Length: 64
Image (cartoon, rainbow, N blue to C red):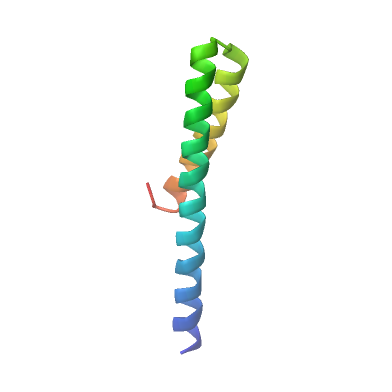
């Protein structure tokens, strides 16, 4: 019974983390779009790096 409760708790935490990552991804995509409009290469590079980290974690969570 204890394992079942822990398993459900872990899934809930993973689902919440995936939701947060999706929100972060949306924000970074909006920031990247803004940087593209401004032709700000440094900002674009930073956004792309953050998006890659988010992507990697989402894949790890098998939520993408």
